Image 1 (cartoon, rainbow over the protein chains, first blue to last red):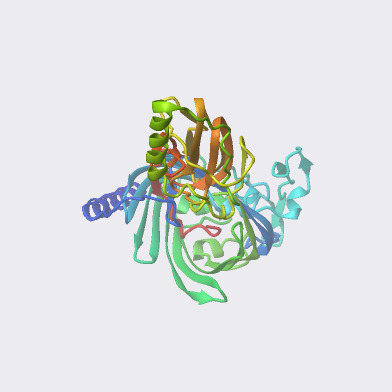
Image 2: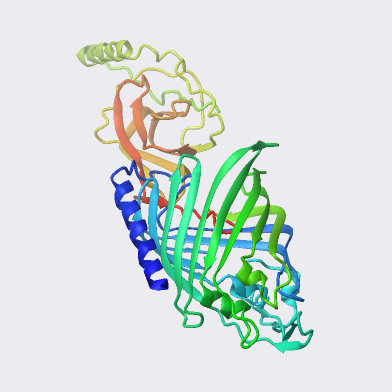
Length: 295
Length: 179
C-alpha cells in the first residue's frame, strides 16, 4: 500500500515537472532572495526568546534561545541545515531534488536530538559538556506516565532516523510551495512521510513584511507507532498533522534583522490518542534578532 | 585634491645662426600646438573621496611650452594590473600604483580615463610615481599624455575580471518551521 502511494506521488511529481519544464523562464542570473551563487554558503544565528511546546506527557517544553541556520549550495548538491540533497532539475518555477531529512518527532523525546542543536536552549547545557557548546548531551528521559493506568512505563529507545525521497518546490507568483515524499532509510521505522506546504507574503507592517504559511505532514502508521505507540498498550495508525504559521521579518541593518513567528500544528488523532501524549497541538513561537555572519 | 603640479623649465639655450632660427621656429610650432600651456587651465579637480600620493616634481608654477614628448621612450607601469571580483564582490577598492620613466626629461600628465578628476602632471622629469586609492567596477585606463592632454604617450589598463559565477535557486522550504 505504502509503495503504491510512493509510486503515485512520484509519478505525479514527474508529470508536473514535465508539464511545467516546457514553460521554464529565465534562469538565475544574480544573487537575490530566490537565487544564490553556486559554491556559496550562508550562516546566521537568531538570538531571542521562544518556546516549542512538548505534547508528550510530562515532556518539558523546549525553550528557544539561539537558532543557528546554515546552508551550502553547490551546482547540484546542497545542504540546508540537517537536510542534504541533490537537485535534479532547477527551473524558474519548479525545482526537483532528492533530499534527506531527519525524522522530526524525536525532538520531543530527546533534548540532544540533532534537530535541537539547531534550536539551542540553555537547558541543553545540562549533562556532559564536550567542549563545544553544541555537543552537549543531556540525559534522556527515562520514564513517562501512562495516563490510563497511572503507572510508570519504560520508554523504548527512539533512535535518530533519516528519511529520503523526492522534493518538489515551486513558485507561482509570490507563493512558494513544497512537497516532499520521504521514506525512512535508517532501518528504524520503515515508514513514510509526506510533507507539503505553501507560503506567501501577506502584507507590510512597521517597515517589515508579514508572511503566512500553511501545510500538513502525513505520517504512515509505522512512523507514528515508532514514536507514539507502545507495545501491548497502544498501536497507532497513520496521522495527518496540519499547521499554520504567521511570520514577521524586518531588516534592521545590513547584517541584522528582526524575526518573529508563531507556528501551530495540530496533531493527528493517531498521535493525540497515544497514552504518552496529552496535548493535541504543538505551538512554536519565537521573537529575536538574526545576525547574518555570511551570505 | 589639486593634482596639477608643474615645474619650471630647467634650461634654455640660445643658438646662433640657422640653428637658432630653426629652434625658434620649432618653438613657435610647439607653442601653437599647446594653446593651454600658459597656465594650469586644465587642472584637476577634487578627487572626491579618492586619496592619492605621488612622488616626483613637487614644485608648482606656470607651465611653459617645450618640445613635445615623443612617447616612444616613455614606459608606464601600473600595479596591480588585474582586479578579480569573486563571489559577491560588487566592486574593486584597492590602491593602484603607477610609475613611469623615460630616457629623457619629459613634460606630461597622468590621467585616468574613468576618473578624470584625477590628474597628475610633471614637467621636465624623466620618472615619476603616483599612488591612488580607486573604487571601480570596470576596466580603468591610465594614460600619460602631453601637457596639452591631446596626445597619448603611453597607456595601461587595469583589468577587472569577474569570476564566472553560476547561480541557482535557493531551496524554498515553507514546511520548515525556522526557514
